[in-house]
Image (cartoon, rainbow, N blue to C red):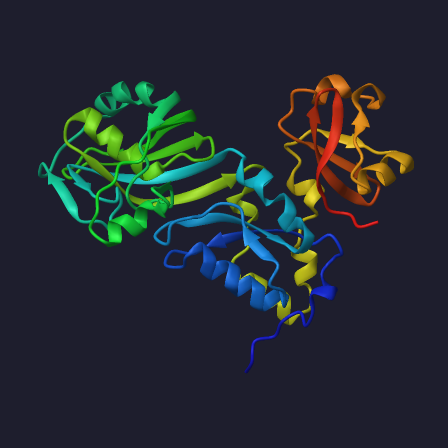
Length: 314
């Protein structure tokens, strides 16, 4: 039986929308995007942050005009649960890489692990792993790795807001399950490897689940099977979250009709004419909306609230 789709993009809401998908193990993020493109009947589908094929969890997709604001979801904080195994290191930092260090079966006490975790909270420096998509010399690190080249990327600062031991099997082999709340750009595989190195016997990420991206939590994410069923019943559009809700972590300005028209024409709003200007002047971005939803994303520049990404067409 052929797979049913929404026949045209015209059946999507005019502004598009956001889907929070539970990515299964074994699929790439692009595989999930392709699956939703077929279901929604539109090429205008993108994701807001890659999740490794061997990982599972929240993958936030944007459809239609909402693809214009993907970066603001991608920039948001994230949370993970990760299982790590001690006593062995791999070249990718996960269970799929080649072993580069093996210190044998090790035991670890909760106090021993807990003693090193504080050095991995707050602002920390990470070197992206060779399996990452960071570009060095015009090519992604994983492309260098495929050709057998070892290239070290420049270190980068990330934020670890919370790092907690959920469970510990003292071993041998020792295993720990951690909860991590972090900024965008944090490499969980590198975090596990660095924790193992700090303990003196290496470690790798056995399995990880992304449990949150911004306000999108795992318990509310939909499986691809659920999305297929929604397509078959003609209710896929009902699964879309409006962009205004999906970006609820950003402050909002409710536009008057005159302001809305100005924004849709690309004109900025003097900050002193915005009622809650004190609350938005230092925000990384601002939702500009009316009763129908999100009109644009704005940024404050030199005392003017300027539309940066306009979703509504005049």
